[in-house]
Length: 209
Length: 209
Image (tube, rainbow over all chains, first blue to last red; front, side):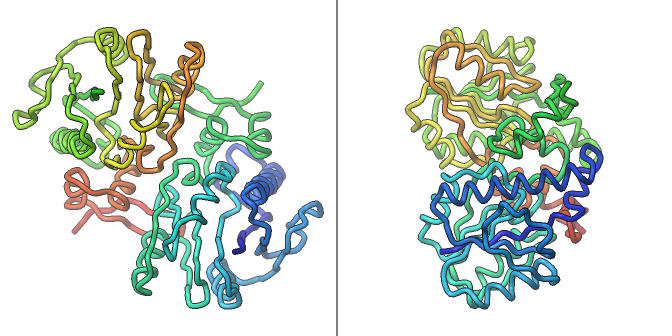
C-alpha cells in the first residue's frame, strides 16, 4: 500500500486568519503535514507521495516523494489514481489528531473502501484497495458523494468512526480540539500561542500569556 | 450496571431557536431521548433512570424510571451517584447518533472510567465502574475536568474515540451531522423539515421543500 497527501502551503488555512498571520499559518500547516508523515511512519506506511502545487511549498527536511501539479485537488488525485496499482490511502494534511492506531485499524479492514468522515460532510481519509477505476470528488458533501461512488461500483465500504480523525483543522474552534486532544508538533506550536478559555457553556481559544 | 440520563424538556436547546420553534424543540428533544433509550435497550441496558426537573416533561409513553429534582445538573448527579452501588453510565439525552455498538464497546472496557468526549471539551458519556466516591463536574471543559478527577482518584481511564458519539445536538450545524449520519426518530423528524445544502466548501442546513 501507499499513502498520498494533498498539500498546499501558500496562503493555506485562510479561515484561521483571524487568529494566525499568513506566516504563522504557513508554519502551522507544515507542522501538521509533518505530524501526519510521522503518524504514517509509526504505522509502517513507508511509501508516501505528497501532491502539491509548488515544490517551494515543501520544506527541505521533508524527504518524502513530492509530485508537483497545477491541477485542482480532484483532477490531480484522479490522474494520480489511474497510475497506482496498489491500495492507496488519501489522507489530508490537516489531520494532526490522527494516530497510528487509526491508520492500522483503517488498513486492517477487509472492505474495499474505508472512509473517515470529517465534520460537515467532509472526507478526511479515504483508503481505496483498488484505485485504478476509482475516482474522487472532494468539496461539498464529499462523504456522501464518496459513499455513492463506492455503491455505484458495487464495492463494499466501511465508515471508520473516530472523533480524533474527524477533526480537520480549519477554524479557530478546531484549535481547541487540538489543544485538548492533541500531541505532536502542530499541537506544541498552537500551545505556545493559545490557551483554552472556559466559560460555563463553551470552551474557546484565548491568547497564551 | 445501570444508565442515567439527565433530561430537560422545557425550553430545551435554545441554540436551535433560529431553526426550530419552542414547540418543535420540545418535540425534538423528546425524540432524541427516545432514540437514546432505544439504543440502550438494544445494547441490553435495562436499568435506566431519567433525571429531570419536572415530571410533566417526560412523555407518558416512556416507561423508564423518572427521578424528579429541582437541583442543578452537577448537584443532582452527584447526589444520585452516592446512592448507586453498581457501574453507572451517565449518558446525555442529546446523542441520537450513539449506537448499540458504542454502548457495548464502552461497557466492555476494563478501565475504571470510560469517557466519551464531545466537541468543544464536553463529556458526552461517562461510564463509572465504582460511582460511590466519584463526583462529576459538567459544563465548561468537563472532559479535561473529568480526566483530572479520575487521575486524582488514582483510577484508570479510557477515552473512547467516536465521531458519532462526539456529536451532541446543540446547534443548527449539528443537525447536518444528524441528517448525514443519523438513523432513528430524531433524524426522521429533522429530515421532514430540513435538507442539506451543498456549496463548494461547506454543507449547511436548508429547508426541506
